[in-house]
Length: 127
Image 1 (cartoon, rainbow, N blue to C red):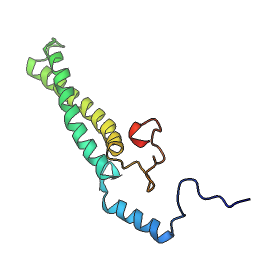
Image 2: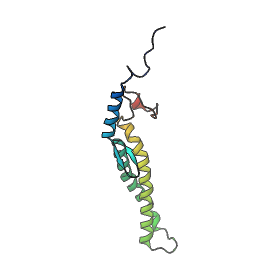
Image 3: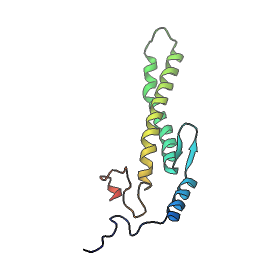
Image 4: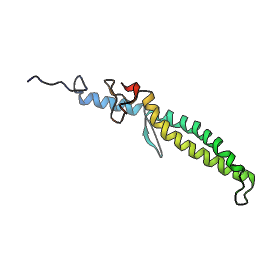
């Protein structure tokens, strides 16, 4: 029986190659209080998504401030609705775009150009 080649790799990488790859990934990454290590695309997607969707959330919930609530003045109601909308929208933006941007920038591909663990095999750009 013929010897089988590894299915996804031309050869098994050496320990030094793997350590070098990990070091390059860490050099390109970000770290911070409250979110741990993140890739460049995760940070760009998270920040951009938070700003975009925070603004959308603010605009969507702001009109609810015009509804009379428990004797609060108009300015207080508008402020509460605007802040709530911005926080909710920003949270969505960080979660969605922080996870989606690495796929868009092909950070989810392995060294052979195939989708890595956790990638959706139905993503057209990963085929």
